[in-house]
Amino acid sequence: MEQRLSLVSLGVADIAESTRFYNALGWKHAESQSNEAITFFQMGGIILGLYGRAALAEDAQVADSEPGFSGVALAHNTRSKDEVDAVLALAEKAGATIKKPAQEVFWGGYSGYFADPDGHLWEVAWNPFFPIADDGSVRLPE
Image (cartoon, rainbow, N blue to C red; front, side, top):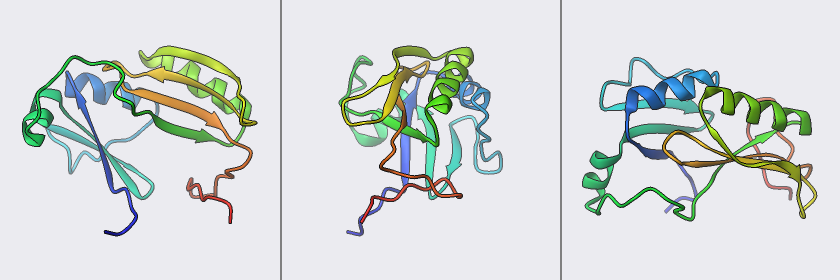
């Protein structure tokens, strides 16, 4: 298996409402590939899909359990500390719940967390050790 993450599927309660939330963050969904059952966002070399929560559980053949901490957090790295604060403010304005306000963190960066309307956790972080390329990609240092 090649070492690659291709697509992240988030199970959501209301696809239209979740699409509006991510659009309010300034993201553009792929209208030609999206429909009432799924919304796709191109995110550099990865795709984010918003899929009905019950349908996603059924597709994976698992029980649709109560939302809660699943041991997963998605991350959005920024180019500066100020951008962390701006992204968290934008997310809150769009309908997110701030779970951890931005603060200096033990590993030398600055980060905070928000939950989208379905409770999916997003870390927003400035990491001085992971510079962001012009195309938005992040590479581990050699």
